[in-house]
Image 1 (cartoon, rainbow, N blue to C red):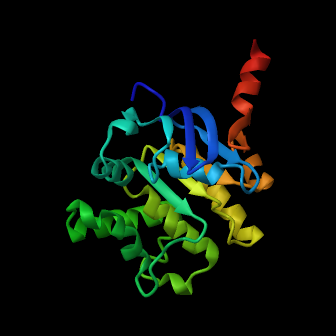
Image 2 (cartoon, helix red, strand yellow):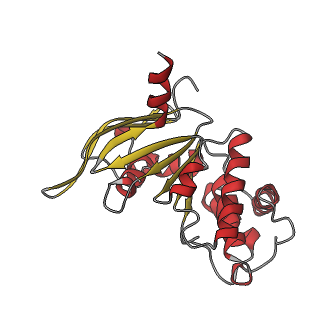
Length: 231
């Protein structure tokens, strides 16, 4: 791709008379590892929904993987999410009573991929996150850290251009949280673009770049700080 994986230009978001985002601009390159941090009410969750194409901005532009999302229909946005964006959520969003393999394979169910290929790719993704020994396990019988690994495997299934992880350690104990952070670090080292939305400073410290959102604006960006120091 010729441009950045994510280019946010003067994005604003209002709900009625309440403006939550006040003109955010942010660029993330291919292969970056970024923490988006901020307190509750700062606007970071709203920003996640917009950059992940789950919601549209009131004004401004969001370009994902060289695609201007403002020019795309809802069906085209769904296709973009399916093919180029991976999501990892705090609450896992796994189906109980269904094996880890089938949970991951669900990501290919509506893309016309044959069952054999869905299963093969799901198992490959699970092995990539260190769960080759849990392929047929029910998520209910797994630890929190293992369930989050299943969710990460599902996010990686379509080889997305960017993975958004929303508070990925929020429901985990400290040991499991550290393991998930280490896994995200490994995926980044392999070339995956990872953006973690978090309010935890320990999580942000493990990322390569830190962007702080406060009161609906970019308050600080460590990349800008480094660039300024090199002038």
